[in-house]
Image (cartoon, rainbow, N blue to C red; front, top):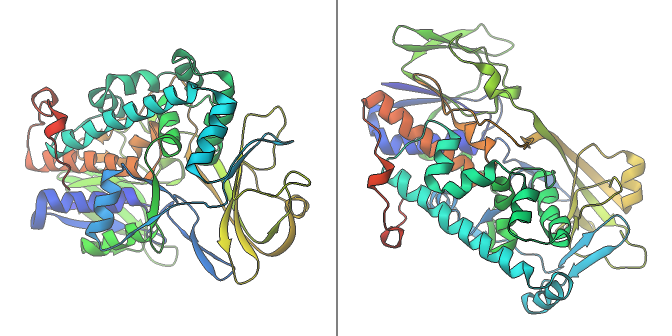
Length: 450
């Protein structure tokens, strides 16, 4: 049997290949069609003699798939930390500056926000505990046709907050406006370049790293994970752009090619699309209602600067990370992170919604040696209400990125790719789905295994 997978460079496609190999072994032949470099929104940026992740740069300590896959392909974890602390900036001043010392910062947060932060931490712990159920369900080969079904079966609370804005969700929990507008908004600006109008589920995905557990990254760069997964599964990678997918008598016919070569057609039993369709330019079968899969994405510009950051607040030393809170003024940036020392001075990563002009960069930096920019449509624009697309677009044709309608993150891509792998397995082997009510009744006894 053959299976086709097409992904613009990313973790969703390569982890899907891994999960399919687990389920089907040598029965399945896999081809990944990739027009550029394996990695997707996990990319490497070199500046100032150093290398960094320009896309997904952090992973949560509770992200089971990311941890297990990292270990499986022989990569190592590296703790993510910032000894320079963090500042919350409103366009005029720092409303809060954290030192990086957990003991000192606890009292600073308490002094400004009161005990309401503790309630928010408890909600974050509840969210992470409920999320663990999806690993148990998938380990027992439970699959889902839609993102809404996946959320609701994992936890009815997930589907509930998916249907609310983050502001509505937090207000119903009794979270004060100042916590929402500063702490919560800052994480959303930094992680998704969006605000409190996103759905509550993605809001808690954004909050989790700052509330509960710890953060890490892959030693050498997160972009190494999809590259190693492709190599680990011994999957054939075809350097071509997929132009069309059409129905055939035994599955689907894929047409692909490059600008300097004639198009090639090839038949497959099943097809998995693992790239956001808004920029894929793939002709799909007439049976697919393509409109439901085309979603607006949030433009995010990552500007890497080698130089010296000027004081953001005149007369004050800059903290290591600068996060922006809700402001009445339009700010130049969403966040600024100090990446570390370089061959000359320091390297910084500036997130913004629009490209920064030379005068704007000169306003932010007192000295600039080098500038590199990644301008991309990084995440879906999260709006409420929303109708998430199905994973199965048509019998035998699947879409990993349907999961992004709930939240976009490395772990979410892995959850979506595992679900699609189960759907493909059940489709090809004619296996019935498992009733979720008959498994995972006692999560205390569940042991996470890849």
